Length: 146
Image (cartoon, rainbow, N blue to C red; front, side):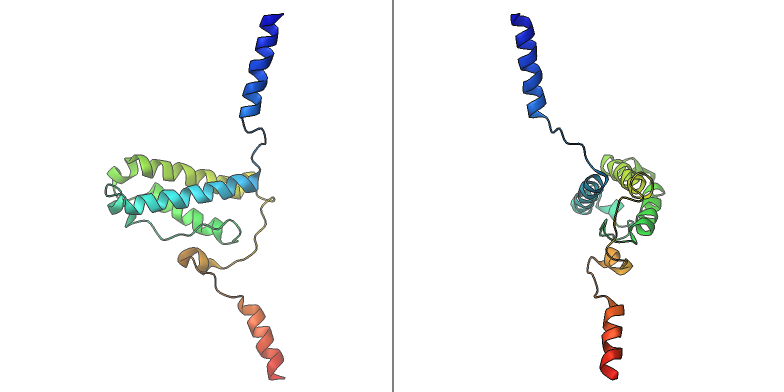
């Protein structure tokens, strides 16, 4: 009787300590994008990978932007086909490659219809700054001209 009670107590203590909610497509894509951006910052700062980062294009990952699939695909191509073999084998670059592949497959295959894109500002992914919606500005100018 005591052994069963001890086993039951251990089981419930483990269950209460773990995070029981599964990650949704959106939450996983969001967390992966933050991890990739943090890793890119480290790659640009760290002296061993700074030379490898010079080849990488500038990317600001926003999973709410419809242009993310094309930009992420291009970024992944550069990471996979880095000109330097030694850079391709560096641990941080391998982790970057793996996380980028995971995010790309999540966005394009696993959560294809689950993600909602709020903008299609491709320049924002390159620069990190979102420009105002020009279609609304043009409409307002047309209305003011009348």
